View 1 (cartoon, rainbow, N blue to C red):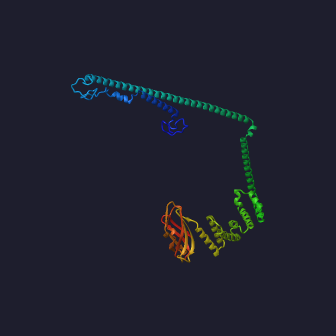
View 2 (view 1 turned 90 degrees about the vertical axis):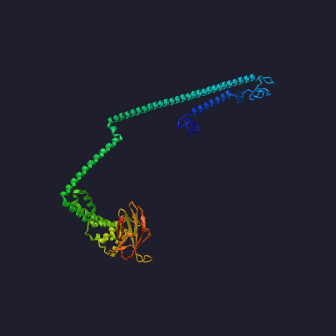
View 3 (view 1 turned 120 degrees about the vertical axis):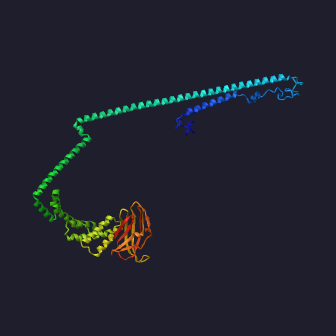
Length: 481
């Protein structure tokens, strides 16, 4: 179903058009009235219409049983005549009279037809006028009804708006009165100090004020205590230090620590620095004695700190060397290592070598850590590279050539063309060795954020000192073994 006015789709239960707003009930009544008027006009026209055979008969000339178009026969009986005959020799009719009667009859028929046509036209015009007047009246009636309906709806909206505004005003007045009442009640409560302290807000304020007062009192107490302690220390400096060193040598570390806490002020730090370092040294050494040897990480860090506190101790250096090598060896026992782990392990082996580790074992372990470091990406802002030396190939098509695994990653914002000719090696003697063979995977147009891996081969038995990659756009990268 569609709207009769605009053609928009409608549902059977709709009363108004969703598009143009037309009232379907009014439109349907107008359509019914229009059909009724058309039916009345049609019936009236049928009543006033002259049948076709009658019109034809009225329009045709009266025959009066004779042929008027023949000049050689009698128009009435059809008997032969001559042009000079005045009357029929058979039926005796006078031709002049007969012609007059025929002409008069024709004239009367024509006049009658004209009057009939005028009457029909007048009747049709009257019916059309009545139909138009009826339609106009009905339209005016419908329009007036619709206008009255809209006026009623508008008046209802005005009434609803006025009622809503009145209700809102009442609610607003009630809220105002409630607010005023609350303010009055609070003012009444405020008159009494007991009422004030019973309110949570004022309770919090009172507690906050008490806390601030307590903090201020504590600050004054601590400041007074500091002043007294500093004054006492400065007055009895030699006696206090003698007691501290005596207790420290006697192993009473807890007492020394408690006593030092009394003088833990910035102005006394320089004076008490030596005794504090000795106390920390004894505490750390005592802790190391209680730790099992399997706790390599903690033992190593403790003895590194002990060397910082007492650099002349051979025992600390020996222990640092021992746990340093263990700490470095543990790096290769971890399932997954980070760059930070590698740096710590490298520092540990450096510490072990520094404090007496001149053996080949230490140097081999250092080389292994360096090789492990090379497996992490390093480079510049465009390209990073990781490498690993697999030594000289003994069998296969690359026998006698040094095999080095390389991995390149493009960290720039543009593609980089990788050419094997960009690779070169510098051996331990400082000689530059050109690339001999490489994996096909290394010949690639490396897109941003992607990486490529493969093997490069150099025709030398010498150990590498560095692997170099020299690119026109990405720059130079050198990984030192």
